[in-house]
Length: 282
Image (cartoon, rainbow, N blue to C red; front, side, top):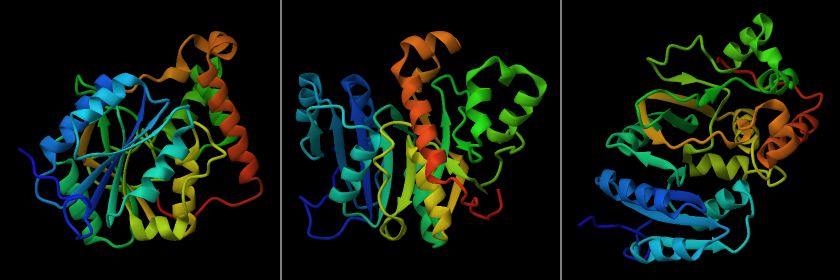
Protein backbone atom coordinates (compact mmCIF):
# COMPACT_ATOMS: atom_id res chain seq x y z
CA UNK A 1 0.00 0.00 0.00
CA UNK A 2 1.37 3.36 -1.01
CA UNK A 3 1.65 5.93 1.74
CA UNK A 4 0.54 9.36 0.56
CA UNK A 5 2.24 12.23 2.32
CA UNK A 6 -0.27 14.98 1.69
CA UNK A 7 -1.48 18.06 3.49
CA UNK A 8 -4.22 15.97 4.99
CA UNK A 9 -1.72 13.56 6.47
CA UNK A 10 1.12 15.83 7.56
CA UNK A 11 1.68 19.43 8.46
CA UNK A 12 4.87 19.47 6.38
CA UNK A 13 4.76 21.12 2.99
CA UNK A 14 5.17 18.39 0.34
CA UNK A 15 8.08 18.51 -2.04
CA UNK A 16 5.80 17.78 -4.98
CA UNK A 17 2.21 18.36 -6.00
CA UNK A 18 0.86 16.13 -8.75
CA UNK A 19 -2.18 17.82 -10.30
CA UNK A 20 -4.33 15.99 -12.83
CA UNK A 21 -6.63 17.91 -15.16
CA UNK A 22 -9.58 15.72 -16.09
CA UNK A 23 -12.43 15.87 -18.57
CA UNK A 24 -15.07 13.18 -19.12
CA UNK A 25 -13.00 10.02 -19.27
CA UNK A 26 -13.10 8.23 -15.91
CA UNK A 27 -11.45 5.08 -17.30
CA UNK A 28 -8.32 6.97 -18.32
CA UNK A 29 -8.39 8.97 -15.08
CA UNK A 30 -8.28 5.74 -13.09
CA UNK A 31 -5.29 4.47 -15.09
CA UNK A 32 -3.54 7.80 -14.61
CA UNK A 33 -4.07 7.78 -10.84
CA UNK A 34 -2.92 4.18 -10.55
CA UNK A 35 0.28 5.06 -12.43
CA UNK A 36 0.92 7.98 -10.06
CA UNK A 37 0.72 5.86 -6.91
CA UNK A 38 2.65 3.04 -8.55
CA UNK A 39 5.56 5.20 -9.68
CA UNK A 40 6.01 7.91 -7.03
CA UNK A 41 7.65 6.43 -3.95
CA UNK A 42 10.60 8.40 -2.62
CA UNK A 43 9.27 11.93 -2.30
CA UNK A 44 6.69 13.65 -0.13
CA UNK A 45 3.79 14.47 -2.42
CA UNK A 46 0.13 15.30 -2.69
CA UNK A 47 -2.27 14.46 -5.50
CA UNK A 48 -5.08 16.65 -6.79
CA UNK A 49 -7.68 16.06 -9.49
CA UNK A 50 -9.46 19.05 -11.00
CA UNK A 51 -12.32 17.89 -13.20
CA UNK A 52 -14.39 19.73 -15.80
CA UNK A 53 -18.00 18.79 -16.69
CA UNK A 54 -17.99 16.25 -13.88
CA UNK A 55 -19.98 13.07 -14.49
CA UNK A 56 -21.24 10.53 -11.98
CA UNK A 57 -18.74 7.96 -13.29
CA UNK A 58 -15.89 10.30 -12.36
CA UNK A 59 -17.27 10.73 -8.86
CA UNK A 60 -17.34 6.95 -8.50
CA UNK A 61 -13.70 6.69 -9.56
CA UNK A 62 -12.70 9.29 -7.00
CA UNK A 63 -14.37 7.29 -4.23
CA UNK A 64 -11.65 4.67 -4.79
CA UNK A 65 -8.92 7.28 -4.15
CA UNK A 66 -9.90 8.97 -0.87
CA UNK A 67 -6.34 10.27 -0.38
CA UNK A 68 -6.71 12.48 -3.48
CA UNK A 69 -8.02 16.03 -3.19
CA UNK A 70 -10.86 16.37 -5.69
CA UNK A 71 -12.17 19.64 -7.16
CA UNK A 72 -14.88 19.67 -9.79
CA UNK A 73 -16.83 21.91 -12.12
CA UNK A 74 -20.28 21.00 -13.37
CA UNK A 75 -19.63 22.70 -16.73
CA UNK A 76 -16.71 22.59 -19.17
CA UNK A 77 -14.63 25.56 -18.02
CA UNK A 78 -11.62 25.11 -20.29
CA UNK A 79 -8.07 23.90 -19.74
CA UNK A 80 -6.51 27.09 -18.27
CA UNK A 81 -9.18 27.33 -15.55
CA UNK A 82 -8.49 23.73 -14.50
CA UNK A 83 -4.74 24.23 -14.43
CA UNK A 84 -4.99 27.53 -12.55
CA UNK A 85 -7.20 25.87 -9.94
CA UNK A 86 -4.48 23.24 -9.54
CA UNK A 87 -1.92 25.99 -8.99
CA UNK A 88 -4.15 27.66 -6.38
CA UNK A 89 -4.97 24.50 -4.43
CA UNK A 90 -1.57 22.79 -4.51
CA UNK A 91 1.20 23.51 -2.03
CA UNK A 92 4.30 21.68 -3.28
CA UNK A 93 7.61 23.31 -4.04
CA UNK A 94 7.37 21.67 -7.47
CA UNK A 95 4.29 20.71 -9.47
CA UNK A 96 3.77 17.97 -12.02
CA UNK A 97 0.81 19.12 -14.10
CA UNK A 98 -0.63 16.34 -16.26
CA UNK A 99 -3.77 15.54 -18.17
CA UNK A 100 -5.86 12.54 -17.23
CA UNK A 101 -4.67 10.73 -20.39
CA UNK A 102 -1.04 10.63 -19.19
CA UNK A 103 0.46 7.46 -17.71
CA UNK A 104 3.62 7.94 -15.66
CA UNK A 105 6.60 5.61 -15.98
CA UNK A 106 8.92 4.58 -13.17
CA UNK A 107 11.54 7.25 -13.84
CA UNK A 108 9.21 10.18 -14.62
CA UNK A 109 9.12 11.85 -11.23
CA UNK A 110 12.59 11.10 -9.78
CA UNK A 111 14.47 12.22 -12.89
CA UNK A 112 12.44 15.39 -13.44
CA UNK A 113 12.67 16.29 -9.76
CA UNK A 114 16.43 15.68 -9.73
CA UNK A 115 16.88 17.89 -12.78
CA UNK A 116 14.84 20.77 -11.34
CA UNK A 117 16.70 20.62 -8.04
CA UNK A 118 20.08 20.66 -9.82
CA UNK A 119 19.36 23.75 -11.96
CA UNK A 120 17.48 26.61 -10.35
CA UNK A 121 17.14 28.45 -13.68
CA UNK A 122 14.64 25.93 -15.10
CA UNK A 123 11.02 27.01 -14.80
CA UNK A 124 9.35 24.23 -16.82
CA UNK A 125 10.62 20.78 -17.80
CA UNK A 126 8.74 18.52 -20.18
CA UNK A 127 9.20 14.76 -20.61
CA UNK A 128 9.19 12.84 -23.86
CA UNK A 129 5.62 11.79 -24.69
CA UNK A 130 5.04 8.47 -26.43
CA UNK A 131 2.14 6.44 -27.78
CA UNK A 132 1.29 3.14 -26.13
CA UNK A 133 3.09 1.30 -28.94
CA UNK A 134 6.29 3.17 -28.06
CA UNK A 135 6.31 5.58 -31.01
CA UNK A 136 7.15 9.18 -30.22
CA UNK A 137 4.73 12.09 -30.22
CA UNK A 138 5.63 15.67 -30.97
CA UNK A 139 5.78 17.39 -27.57
CA UNK A 140 8.33 20.22 -27.96
CA UNK A 141 8.16 22.96 -30.55
CA UNK A 142 9.36 26.31 -31.83
CA UNK A 143 7.07 29.28 -31.50
CA UNK A 144 4.22 29.58 -33.97
CA UNK A 145 4.36 31.95 -36.88
CA UNK A 146 1.02 33.01 -38.43
CA UNK A 147 1.65 30.80 -41.46
CA UNK A 148 2.30 27.77 -39.25
CA UNK A 149 -1.45 27.39 -38.69
CA UNK A 150 -2.09 27.68 -42.44
CA UNK A 151 0.49 25.02 -43.28
CA UNK A 152 -0.76 22.66 -40.56
CA UNK A 153 -4.38 22.86 -41.68
CA UNK A 154 -4.19 23.00 -45.47
CA UNK A 155 -2.56 21.15 -48.37
CA UNK A 156 0.19 23.80 -48.32
CA UNK A 157 1.86 21.86 -45.53
CA UNK A 158 2.54 19.03 -47.97
CA UNK A 159 4.34 21.25 -50.45
CA UNK A 160 8.16 21.54 -50.11
CA UNK A 161 8.18 25.00 -48.52
CA UNK A 162 5.33 24.13 -46.16
CA UNK A 163 6.95 20.85 -45.14
CA UNK A 164 10.27 22.59 -44.44
CA UNK A 165 8.53 25.07 -42.19
CA UNK A 166 6.59 22.39 -40.31
CA UNK A 167 9.77 20.34 -39.86
CA UNK A 168 11.34 23.46 -38.32
CA UNK A 169 8.26 24.05 -36.11
CA UNK A 170 8.27 20.41 -34.93
CA UNK A 171 12.04 20.56 -34.26
CA UNK A 172 12.80 17.67 -36.58
CA UNK A 173 16.46 18.77 -36.45
CA UNK A 174 16.62 17.90 -32.72
CA UNK A 175 17.80 14.28 -32.29
CA UNK A 176 16.39 14.14 -28.74
CA UNK A 177 19.37 12.39 -27.18
CA UNK A 178 20.10 15.17 -24.70
CA UNK A 179 18.04 17.76 -22.79
CA UNK A 180 17.53 20.96 -24.75
CA UNK A 181 16.05 24.39 -24.31
CA UNK A 182 12.91 24.68 -26.42
CA UNK A 183 10.42 27.45 -27.15
CA UNK A 184 7.46 25.59 -25.68
CA UNK A 185 6.29 22.18 -24.58
CA UNK A 186 2.89 20.56 -24.77
CA UNK A 187 0.72 21.34 -21.75
CA UNK A 188 -0.36 17.73 -21.23
CA UNK A 189 2.74 17.09 -19.08
CA UNK A 190 4.68 19.91 -17.41
CA UNK A 191 7.00 19.76 -14.41
CA UNK A 192 6.95 23.29 -12.97
CA UNK A 193 8.81 25.23 -10.27
CA UNK A 194 6.42 27.07 -7.95
CA UNK A 195 8.69 30.08 -7.48
CA UNK A 196 8.74 30.52 -11.26
CA UNK A 197 4.95 30.34 -11.44
CA UNK A 198 4.71 32.99 -8.74
CA UNK A 199 6.86 35.27 -10.90
CA UNK A 200 5.15 34.50 -14.21
CA UNK A 201 1.55 34.21 -13.09
CA UNK A 202 -1.20 31.72 -13.98
CA UNK A 203 -2.30 30.63 -17.44
CA UNK A 204 -4.20 33.17 -19.51
CA UNK A 205 -7.89 32.18 -19.39
CA UNK A 206 -8.59 33.97 -22.67
CA UNK A 207 -7.39 30.74 -24.27
CA UNK A 208 -10.20 28.26 -23.60
CA UNK A 209 -8.35 25.44 -25.34
CA UNK A 210 -5.10 25.45 -27.36
CA UNK A 211 -2.28 28.01 -27.34
CA UNK A 212 -2.45 28.44 -23.55
CA UNK A 213 0.69 26.31 -23.18
CA UNK A 214 2.46 28.28 -25.94
CA UNK A 215 1.58 31.56 -24.24
CA UNK A 216 2.61 30.32 -20.78
CA UNK A 217 6.01 29.05 -21.97
CA UNK A 218 6.61 32.31 -23.80
CA UNK A 219 5.92 34.23 -20.60
CA UNK A 220 8.34 31.98 -18.69
CA UNK A 221 11.06 32.88 -21.20
CA UNK A 222 10.15 36.56 -20.95
CA UNK A 223 10.64 36.38 -17.17
CA UNK A 224 14.04 34.70 -17.52
CA UNK A 225 13.02 31.11 -16.78
CA UNK A 226 14.18 28.24 -19.00
CA UNK A 227 11.82 25.78 -20.68
CA UNK A 228 13.55 22.42 -21.15
CA UNK A 229 12.65 19.20 -22.96
CA UNK A 230 13.99 16.04 -21.28
CA UNK A 231 14.02 13.12 -23.77
CA UNK A 232 15.42 10.62 -21.26
CA UNK A 233 12.17 10.81 -19.26
CA UNK A 234 9.04 9.35 -20.84
CA UNK A 235 5.31 9.33 -20.20
CA UNK A 236 2.62 7.55 -22.17
CA UNK A 237 0.01 9.85 -23.68
CA UNK A 238 -3.33 8.79 -25.12
CA UNK A 239 -3.36 11.69 -27.57
CA UNK A 240 -6.45 11.84 -29.77
CA UNK A 241 -5.59 14.92 -31.90
CA UNK A 242 -9.27 15.80 -31.92
CA UNK A 243 -8.87 19.07 -33.82
CA UNK A 244 -7.31 17.27 -36.80
CA UNK A 245 -10.25 14.95 -37.51
CA UNK A 246 -12.31 15.27 -40.65
CA UNK A 247 -9.75 16.84 -42.97
CA UNK A 248 -9.52 20.54 -43.71
CA UNK A 249 -13.04 21.27 -44.94
CA UNK A 250 -14.69 18.72 -42.69
CA UNK A 251 -12.97 20.02 -39.58
CA UNK A 252 -13.82 23.62 -40.45
CA UNK A 253 -17.47 22.77 -40.92
CA UNK A 254 -18.05 20.18 -38.23
CA UNK A 255 -15.24 20.07 -35.64
CA UNK A 256 -15.55 22.66 -32.87
CA UNK A 257 -12.02 21.81 -31.67
CA UNK A 258 -10.68 23.17 -34.96
CA UNK A 259 -12.40 26.46 -34.26
CA UNK A 260 -11.05 26.53 -30.70
CA UNK A 261 -7.56 26.16 -32.20
CA UNK A 262 -8.04 28.86 -34.83
CA UNK A 263 -9.71 31.27 -32.38
CA UNK A 264 -6.96 30.76 -29.82
CA UNK A 265 -4.30 31.29 -32.48
CA UNK A 266 -5.86 34.61 -33.49
CA UNK A 267 -5.94 35.72 -29.84
CA UNK A 268 -2.33 34.66 -29.39
CA UNK A 269 -1.06 36.60 -32.40
CA UNK A 270 -3.07 39.68 -31.45
CA UNK A 271 -1.70 39.50 -27.89
CA UNK A 272 1.89 39.54 -29.11
CA UNK A 273 1.42 41.75 -32.16
CA UNK A 274 4.55 43.87 -32.57
CA UNK A 275 6.36 42.24 -29.65
CA UNK A 276 9.71 40.48 -30.21
CA UNK A 277 10.15 36.83 -29.43
CA UNK A 278 12.16 35.99 -26.28
CA UNK A 279 15.85 35.48 -26.96
CA UNK A 280 17.31 32.12 -26.01
CA UNK A 281 19.09 29.17 -27.54
CA UNK A 282 16.66 26.71 -29.16
